[in-house]
Image 1 (cartoon, rainbow, N blue to C red):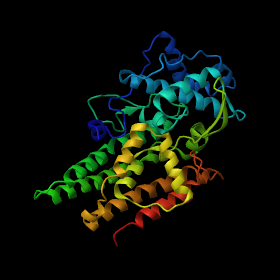
Image 2 (image 1 turned 90 degrees about the horizontal axis):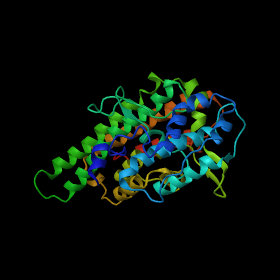
Image 3 (image 1 turned 60 degrees about the vertical axis):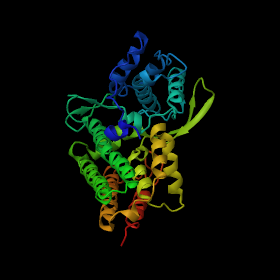
Image 4 (image 1 turned 90 degrees about the vertical axis):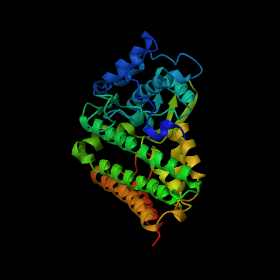
Length: 365
């Protein structure tokens, strides 16, 4: 595992770029991105977006030096595409115009990802720090791109960003645990327990951040004003590509944190449709994140070498995190309407409850 994973978790190694610096013709993406919340309030937004000249990525490869620029380019296009298809108050749309579709498809291919705004573009690459000398944490971060002017959407995204920042401690602890496992000195057991204790404490901390969602996010505004923009694409024609594509919408299930914990702790999943869904979510994650989860899956089972009470505390912490998520799903979605499908296209309440039960069912007692 790289030092970047240990220090930044699944967030980028460096803070995301805030402006495209690939040439004057790319300024239109920054400008339209900044204006998007206002544009989406206009009835002729789709016409305006379809008339813009969005430049293609300037090469047929992606150099490491330009990875941060490529991610910002993808974020801008991903938001524009989702805003176009899912514009609130307008008829359903199943055609993404050539000027948006072709640049999005090209950068998605270079980034080895789906040509659709996923969790990485909505959260992992979509933040900046006010003070770079201070942590990536609420109060010191803001978004780069939004669908609406409401701070509620900023808060929704930024809560996830802080959770991802805290999760670096989980990845660091997993690596420490793995390195210690092969040791034979007298401190081995103590260090193994210390690493597992770090996992427990970090899970508790990300849960405390998730609990803060209602502080600055209205359930009514979330449901009606910006949740529709992170919805799925259903049989969308990508003009200029001769393809009709369908994709799941942006969802926290595309975060790599919980899949990593499931892989590390070897929590078994029953062979249900949920298992197929969880596997499909990996297709929306950055390649390096998928590879990391696969790496963790190959590590030995920590349960036999962890005190049962400590192992169970970690499981209970994960179950508690999922319970908070479950409660917010009821508050922010289920109580607002009859739609029982999540933005990822799943029966979210049923499956969240199933994950909670599976986690607690793996306890030692």
